[in-house]
Length: 389
Ligand code: GLA
Image (tube, rainbow, N blue to C red; front, side):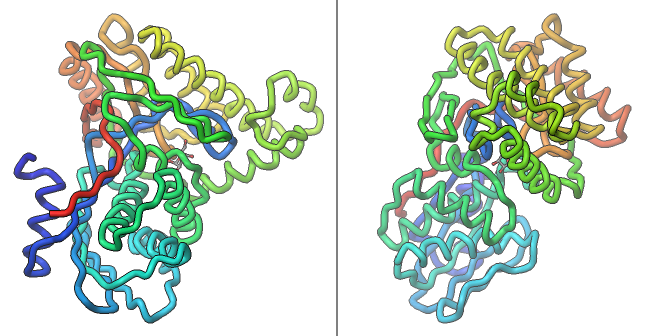
């Protein structure tokens, strides 16, 4: 354990703040989605990997009816009185992740007792790397430890997704809590969001790396547009007379063109083609065909930008710059990742060329936006764990 990683900061922070040692330390990873964007809530496929960057929650019982959760990042405390009803707070507050997960445990019949907890995280917040699912899943895993209950990992992912819907007000899919719960070191996940079947693809090739580029912008549209797109997909499926866009095809879309508005057609086209690209991309990982994998990433970005309309100027600059460096400069492909309207882009690169690629993107992005981007690489990390200390 490094001195300054989230795990040690959570443990040290807990002791400093509450004046005793934590009993449990639980952690869950952020994630980066390599391809398969906005396909999870359409019953499609996604291809995320868990990051080595983690959110850690250290906790210990406090023999009371109160729960106090302190955040290192915001220096705020969430206080819950277990004798009172548990309701969502104002939109956008991180306390909703904690409250929503607690509500899930109470609904499941767990007798929750008072405890103190301290959260520290290495997952950038609000950058499209699923810091919220990392917090929810880490917190749920802490609750399991503290109350000596075990929840099956899929059930835990669903509980956290419900927290996101009902407390945070984001109608998200299953991808983020699923990978945060179940992530596997050195493996990328191909998840069928309809059957919830997980296929783990080994990815331990040292010559190839996943580079994450944070634009360091977040446009306000992100949350409202997410719900609008989800609703548009529902409408498209209804017009196409399928139960979800997973069941749709380009031929069917073509056939129904006359009765659909142009924007809805483009939303559906993104989802249909993105699902196909994701399945192909998984094959390319199996074959270690990084060149074609990169081409699928590039095509995914085009589709997200033009058909799904969830990119933004800053993401496009990063992606264009990386794509211009291209194969000869060691970039296989690049695309926006996560919910869009800012946050991060992800590129597949030759490990040996990392420094020059970072330098090139950094200079161009600064020159065109006056914003400093941040870069990091991660190998696929493990899913949620908890230890009793
Ligand atoms: C957010 C949501 C996910 C998924 C992605 C887009 O991260 O939480 O469920 O829909 O956006 O692929």
